[in-house]
Image (cartoon, rainbow, N blue to C red; front, side):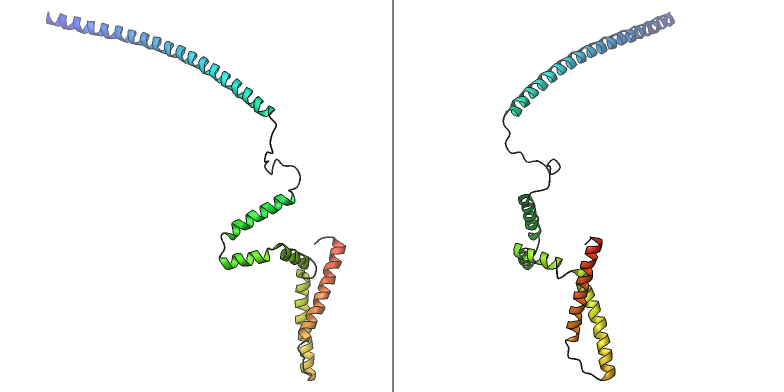
Length: 191
């Protein structure tokens, strides 16, 4: 008899666990349906609030765009045309101030002197006319060759040198270098 009781109680337990599993599945489905419904309601509420917010922002931006605009700084990419003289000067001064802040006191003083507008303009004019690199290089090469030739001739013949030979040969080479540079510029049209 005790065996029958055990079989019945185990059968009842099996039956109870199966019914519990079915009830759990049904409850899970109900909860999932509830969650979906809540999510759909929240999405519709969020969508509606997003629409209202977008309309408010659009109307406020329309009101702001209707106001007359003050001078707005544009980025260099948006600006049309070359930079003005004032903009270039402001940029140059800002760059120089930043670089000078990192220099020692003597270097800063030297930088102030050589970047003074009058000295800088003079340097640019001299560099583009009489102190051209080709003219100086040709003067140095001509001076070396011509002075060496004069020295060898003077030594072979026993003549003394006065000391002006080097300076004079440099000036001759420099003039020849300038002439060559300007002729090349006329023919080729390039600097």
